[in-house]
Length: 227
Image 1 (cartoon, rainbow, N blue to C red):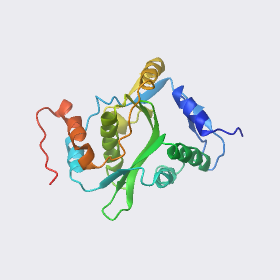
Image 2: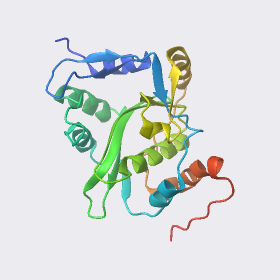
Image 3: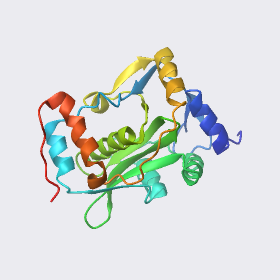
């Protein structure tokens, strides 16, 4: 088993590679660079009306980086329909090191009692964010996290949101696959940007950016009071 450092992991991301473990119990890592890469264009993200109402309702508290390890563990845990996951203890250790150095972040969606309802985590490098995994314990929670992520990336000046692959869930929100050569060009451009991770990703901090996500598709004004 070859020892991989966090620095080498970042280098791999800058080249368009990402790792997965064969299974949750494995110490091995496998490297991937799909010929068609999933992305969500930050200017083409579509929030359906029902989802937007849920996001703006304030039903959940959304925060960033309050418990990165807990978010990873939630994504790694087996669930109905997802009995096997690729997030191994070795993967967790590597990404927690990235988090400690400011290169990995989590978006956590919490219930009013503070318990975790779901969320996502990923890697930030330059103006690129590489989404790694998301989880929902209740309906739409991972989508709520994704809405806040896109708004945070737009606010912070990011250029690329990499989703690795495109699922039906992501395609309904604007996700699409691009050829590897196109992805590499987008990645190279994004890595020249010094984007800023906002840190505060709750509804009040991102309200304007979240509202703007609806306007390109919905048309007209969208007035919502936070009071």
